[in-house]
Length: 295
Length: 182
Image (cartoon, rainbow over all chains, first blue to last red; front, side):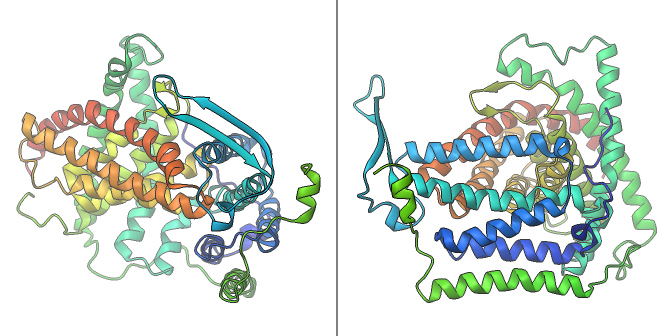
């Protein structure tokens, strides 16, 4: 199996944007919904909608992204469920001062201890869980498309032009370039060890034994990479790496659409911050939710 | 090499940081189809041992880059996305593990290996705590949820992997380090 990138060139608006504009937009939205601590669904819903629209505009094939979405959704449900089970604290204070009617209550004694696990789902808490889910999915919808839509060969120059040092950016570039070679070495080593009778798939033995069995795979790949690294260091030193400012093969240019896109991110951030300063953005449960869940 | 400050950042750090990151990314990606032991929701990722090893053998910068860039690469290969807080958290694991670099003189000695493992576990605690606590702001979850849901399973799994695989990697590296003569 070859190591391949998820990236594929697509003729989409998203991929025509400069990666710096996209990362700036993402940073603004992350700040807007986390640092400001806005919990009002009326403010969060438009941001959620924007991030979903952008996600669909990236036109990533479902079969490519299915695994990631299933994993992330299951994990979100697990975390929200666990949060409810562990007392449902966190988030805004109004969720704690909750006197709405109870929809479901469960109390399980923990064997051999005097404690009990209490799960109480109220009208307010059920809506809070929904808002939590909305925030997490907003972030996931922005994060998931990145590897599918940004060319791995321009990560280095992207971070360089965003202010990272030459050396740091070049490390990133080099890491991306090493991936196919080291991936091939990894596969060759695995096949070679299997030919010698190495049983990777074997489920025999306890945990420690099974972890130790990974050593015949990890050790040769890692040590070979280090030995080859010496040659790369010599080659780079001989070419006076780090002596002067680097130039980059690919240059990035911000266009009008990139400025608009970054402006959208900044506007979202400013709106959220202003709302918070003016006292809006507290957790709010819509009236229809009380009627819908039957109280 | 040992006489140099552990904070110097030259060609060596660039190259080993890149190699560490690429290996960390590939091994994280390989975890998806190589059957790995798991207990409950604790998964044991061998990639962690490689990252801690790069920190303990080449210093804090290489550890930081291996974790920071390696996690970004791993997520790019598997297609999960880009999560800055987990990348920074992984970087912190490598950085703290790398603080042991000048304390490890002999890669075969039990004491020095113990120091490497100790710093590796400390690094895991620091890095995973950072990543788990930032999730509180993202999801509005409780501190307990962050600790039980994110921190504890990852910390336990990573510590077991570090304890078992790091000594093997350090002993194997002793031969390579002697041969390189640097």
